[in-house]
View: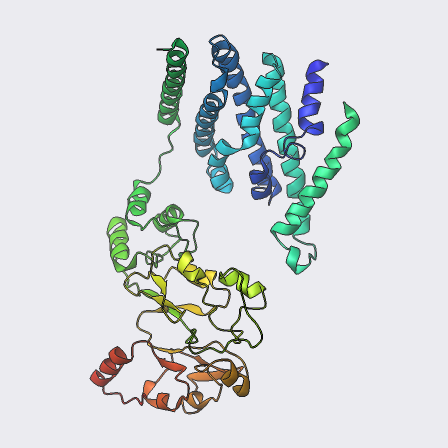
Length: 190
Length: 284
């Protein structure tokens, strides 16, 4: 039950993108097409889960026993950078078109604050191992969900008659704001 | 020394080593074999990633050239040297690349242009801001704003603002990448092949009376240059448009232009060239 609550909380109620406003850059950047939004969501989820695992091990097996809590941020960044490099290699090997579609946003997962946020939040809330992993999965699911919803809306928006001053980025930001408002509706759930 | 410090250094160093090792192994296992020519081509490209070729950066262009999707003279920045090099790598015959240059098509600097009466502009001097704020303090709504946004846009340091408040292109440094063209909100900079000499140095579409009011060197739209040009110059909304494929310099009465809006970029160089080819041109 506890795990389910953590998952729902990370995915919907405290959605990383629409409630914590983490990872806005790919949220705006890669939400043009549903297909690439899903792939980006998958890649980010993969990195999120791996980060949750590695950073939990690092934090609880090395940093806490040796009283090195102050190394949290640099060591987590190191973990994330290495993992993103790894994911980039895998994607390049597995799917060239996907590698090209994600473009610059793939290496930019390194600086995606959703991932550092996840590692820091999990450490702060003192989750145990399983909880951390579920937290990572939930955050990834929430991130993917937000990206896919946004991409779906933007695909429709391409056909809509948007007033000229609002075309492009402005209407996207307005939609993002409305979407964030809609997600506030989940607030009372837990 | 404090023991915590040593542990901290050891931890971060150890982590770095572990990750580096893991990535090195992953790189060996997951390396994607790509055409080595791509890397070779990429090395000789200017690597300014300016996007003037229409691709997302130099590497993308290199991939497309090797795949045969892009032409080997597609990089306007690199010039002939790069074309030759790419041709050598790909074992193709080199094709000529015409050097492109940016031309500033406005003569209305601080001296020539008329300022708006009863108006004083005290805001940021950047062109895009001036455009929003009633178009700056010059009366001409088509000419250079003098904010120097093109200077900032140029990655190659090929543009400077002269003392008259007009951008000047340093031709030796200009690569014709077109960044300045995009930066200019008034569209007064254009990219042209190096060998084009004759230009209309004005973008003003106002009627003759107003043109005279707003700027001393504006094209007033009299159309005298177009009249005997055999269709190589066409008047469009009080502004001549030159069709370079039909242009016959001897037919155009450049000396009749009252504001000197249509002229050669380098009057001396052009005169010499024309003398060699025995073409008589009237220049004032």
